Image 1 (cartoon, rainbow, N blue to C red):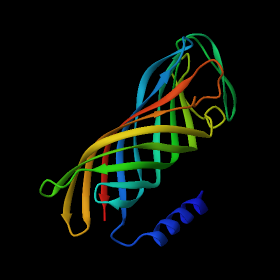
Image 2: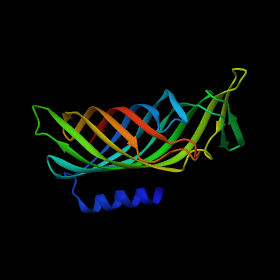
Image 3: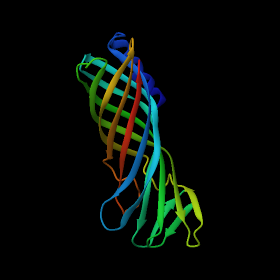
Length: 218
């Protein structure tokens, strides 16, 4: 992963001049939940988190750019199963009773690829929109459950959560010039995972994310 990111940055830097290449950082608060397909489980709660990392943009003209980067995010949500189910956590199998809830907290390394569109500036402000897909590599995963005697138990869940996901995302907002080549962005975004994130065959869990986009470009 580290070698792939390094090669990406080198290739971009060697093919564009300073005016075409923008670098930046982002710190994006997120609100995520798990969508459930079928009748085996029900969504019960959400997970707050943060998506932070680096941004690289290659401009083809003033109005559109290729955008990529790398970030680390925390996502997840809570589900309750309708029947007794056995989940495979790292310390062994764990049986959940009907209606017993499990809260998943998952850390992903994200590599997004998108097209960024920007309006002509209205004074020092422009409107932007972006759409794309992102590869999501699971770094950590935990599951918090309530035992029958109402005691919380948190377990390593990397054996239950699949190591890879892919999601599409869209976003829109405003970009304000701060002087020189520096600008700040504020917007909203939505992402939806294509793949079932759980290895359990009795459910089909998809990741949904709403975000407040905060980026500083220079």
